Image (cartoon, rainbow, N blue to C red; front, side, top):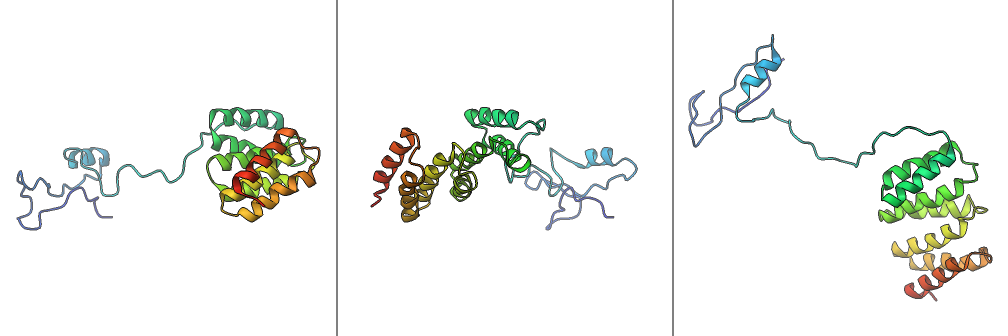
Amino acid sequence: VPDAVIAVQSMDGGAGETSPSNPLTPLTPLNPETPAQGMALGLVNGDKLIGEGDMPTLAPSVPVRPKLQDPKQLYDRALTDLRKGLYLEAEGDLVQILTDFPAHSLAGNAQYWLGETFYVRQDYKRAAEAFLSGYTKYAKSIKAPDSLLKLGITLIAMDEKKTGCDALAELGAKFPEAPQAIVKRAEIEKRRAGCQ
């Protein structure tokens, strides 16, 4: 295996020459018997090996947290995270509820709040999918009208005005007993979007 490249030799001068205008240093062989010591000796002025350095973070990392097995505790922790703006952490707990406890009474609520984690991050495609699932799969949930409302709002945000307006119009027909706050919000959103 060849030694690691630590510096580049001058292209226009003799090997081993350095000057103030050309601070590149000649290659320093590493001692295979003491690689750490050899490497420390070969590096000059904080030089780094080729490819060494800070790599850009490709995706936000979610801290590892204790895995809970109680859907109520997961749900409470997710809502606390949502209030703090910790959307990735909340998403993890909500997905766990929907995966491990899909028939639990809080699953419909978890589906709605999962959509919210995407919506606040402007990931409208995933938000629309989550709200649609909350409206169809968990139609008996108390959050089903909320899911349909947010589905309409999300579709309008995605420039799917006709479909979004249809979803908002369907709210009154599908959920005549929906809370007044949701009905009023739907009317406001229909006016804002210019729904017919």
